[in-house]
Length: 280
Image (cartoon, rainbow, N blue to C red; front, side, top):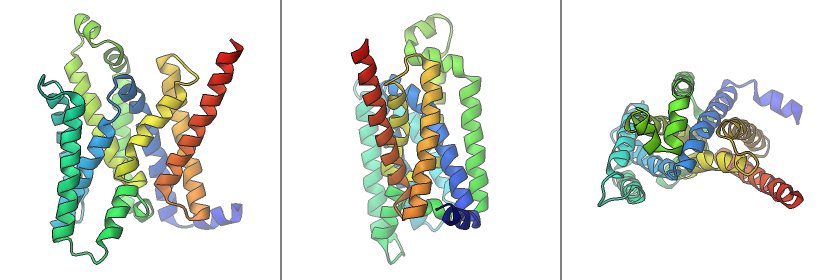
């Protein structure tokens, strides 16, 4: 098994995929805690569908560097979801549903109508589930992922205290002079960056799992915000590593394997938590 892993790591694409996978897992786990606590966890699912729609537009227009379209459209959609969610006539969950389902439907329609590929079903499947795209990353795409990950990490570290305050009590935050609207916007835009990063790893349909599972798993054991953040990051990175190596050795889909590893760890932590409660 070790020899097989050493053989695979001779190829740059495998090393690239592991780097991107670990970075995406780390960034997803950090923002996931905030989104779960704010009851806004499905923004990841909504934005992933938007990213799929943007990818479809880039595909049918023949743009080689799809990130030029996917990134700005996803960020703009994050802002729209945040703004629309404050409308008393359209609540947050309805805004997410409207934008995400609309983008998914339009994207799929465009691919079917204008795609020049002979394997439309395969292309859609790869985009939705991240089956092979993680192993086709080029060097410049890896550097772009590293750059975006660095931006996400810097934002989280620099605004940690403000994000903590806005997460738990927006009214109190406003009373103490914190512009909660600005930091909610920062959270939404940062989430959009993570979605774009994660598309190549787990695909559009499984992105929300990377955001949700590590955070709710950590919450089974820990109670403080800082402890949950740290535990969530560790769980996410370990599950990404396990999922990647299992996929490499046994030929399973990368994204689905990583999510399965997260599910298994969640059940383990749930059992530990139930035993702890019983002893008390």
